[in-house]
Amino acid sequence: MTGFGKEEKLINNYNVVIEIRSLNSKTLDLNLKIDDSLLFIDEYLRKSINQKIIRGKIDMSITINDSNKGLVIPFNRQKVKEYIKELKKDFDINESQIISNLLISEKFQDLEIKLNKNDIKKIKSMVDMSIEKLNNYRIKEGKAIVKDLKKSISKIDRYIKEITSIESSRIKDKKNKIKTYLEELENKFDKSRLEQEIIYYIEKLDINEEIIRLKNHLKFFISEINSEYAQGKKLSFISQEIGREINTIGSKANNFKIQSMVVNMKEENEKIKQNIFNIA
Image (tube, rainbow, N blue to C red; front, side, top):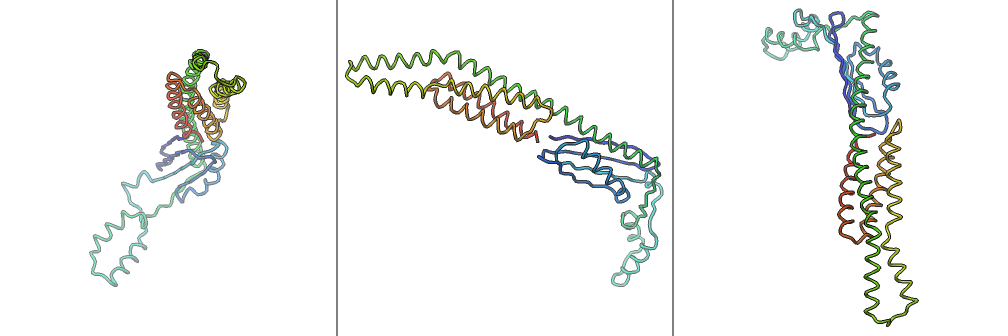
């Protein structure tokens, strides 16, 4: 799921900024953007992230700047001279303007950064803190998502109870209608054949099996989101099964009240699907 962590600290006159972001991904996809002077910490970064983050598309950046840079601009004088010399061969240039522009370009600045062992230790600590902040952010977001998912599951369960409460009367009404229709026919029919057709018809109207399966899917869904590492792919599969049973109940019910509740259950299942997108 999404997350963000940031650490910023002044270390030995260097302003160090660490930012880490995460997006949904089925695997751990790591993208590092760090200053060339910090390449030595690359292995530590990868190891820490692999140990502390299970999955997600992770973007991490570390920038480091000399805090005194605004007062004294360090630059490579020889590079500037060579650049001016080459330009003069082909162009009539304003040296003062060119030099002014060059001095603010990182290409001509002496950006050598010197860090001691204690500085490196502090930067590593910042890395760990930024990852911890990211995970705390993800945990907080995860709890909110789980709360919404459980709320939707609870609503679907309530609709099932309402459907169950009117199911017996629904079937009874259908049987009475059939009985009335048969009386109107004045026994001008094949009773054996008719019994078979009635049984078949009642079975097609019966939604008890779908209700039982739907309840089991809801329980399975709750057990999965309560597990330590809920998987979005698995939850998505369960939500598809939930949707399938809801649709079948709607097609078999042939009852306005039940149809209304089916529409509401579909709406809650769509909310579930949208929330699952935020779970890798």
